[in-house]
Length: 523
Ligand code: GLN
Image 1 (cartoon, rainbow, N blue to C red):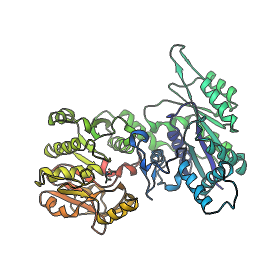
Image 2 (cartoon, helix red, strand yellow):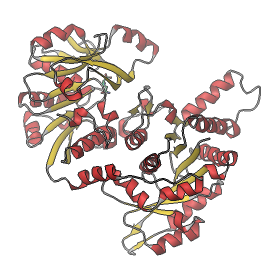
Image 3 (cartoon, rainbow, N blue to C red):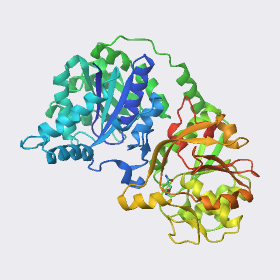
Image 4 (tube, rainbow, N blue to C red):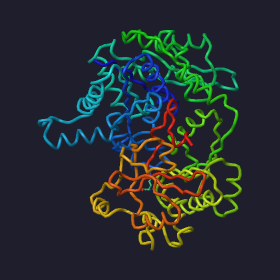
């Protein structure tokens, strides 16, 4: 039977539960255990697919096409293994399942209630995901005290009783603020949050205390005393300059030893040298590379979480210090603007996105990169932008556009395919998840991937319009990758350019610190 670790948050949101969970997952994996990660999100949306990136940040897509919380991206990046749709459940999804069962008559006339029906469903998800692994790490979204997360906490409280103390560990992540005026680190919020957690029947087994600076012995002892958590299990996660250093901080505090002790797991040695090298590359590289990321969510960089991560991994692997220039494409109004903003950048990236806002700024930026031979990389919407710009300004199709933005434009070089139009009437048209792509010989893409066929994750509706294949190729834009049946264009490149490539998929989802994605890195 799998052992279970639950990570719960207190005091504040945004303390980095996802990073803490991922870091612990990495340490356990490095000890040789098979770890599976899972996140419960207390909101009522069935998945984050329809939520605005302004509010919720990036939607992370798994190989099996699930649209999930961005924390799953961290899990994959730290643990390395691809996750699937089982790794993210929301309250909405759980209620949906229970209500469907109720309509189906599965509850045999009983009154359907949060306890036990919702909580049983939650416990089932926890048990099911643990079928084929040694350890399940479950992160519970939200903060103790939220009404929404109560059913999850109740379910895990019961779960501990079901599986036994030695098979279940509660980790509570709290915050120890530094109050400048008093010159002191304060433990009270941690005490109160722990009391709140105990009120609902959960005594944490281990605390991770976030703080701006390292906690001293005295503070840790005080926290231990007031929270009923053994002194050795009060672990301090002080601020570090890169998230990839968090596992090291936790390892130095011997969190893995405490976990093994509690769960009766054999403790094994951890070889951290590969990650030490990554951390060193991130922190100590001196030569700078500056990449402009042009999008409309640039004020909310969580919307581009995986793109940022992939750039970090690639820069580190090339021993370069990464500087990202976030360019809001809605604010681009003239060529002058672009010239000013792009004067010193080493490369331009146009990431994914939806809707017409900021589109013309992006088109102008792609044109600037093409004309001035600045390295350009377009992702999903970024590929559409590159195609629109090229057809407008090189192929002479002045009114080319995407039917996503102007439905009846004269040259819809990007459009919905016929079968999608039918599907749209039925609801779901999104192309989601991992799909194969065949690379053409003699292309930049082939040179980067060094493979004939690749698999990458998708999340989009609109496709390149095959009617325009001839005209773009005649004018110097090459189709470097397609679906195996050659129906869908996956990669385009401009031959007469040192580096101009754009892809229909999202390579950023598959980049790892210890295995950077070749498109970001290998050029
Ligand atoms: N809005 C575009 C589409 O749906 C691109 C989506 C994206 O960039 N992920 O096709």
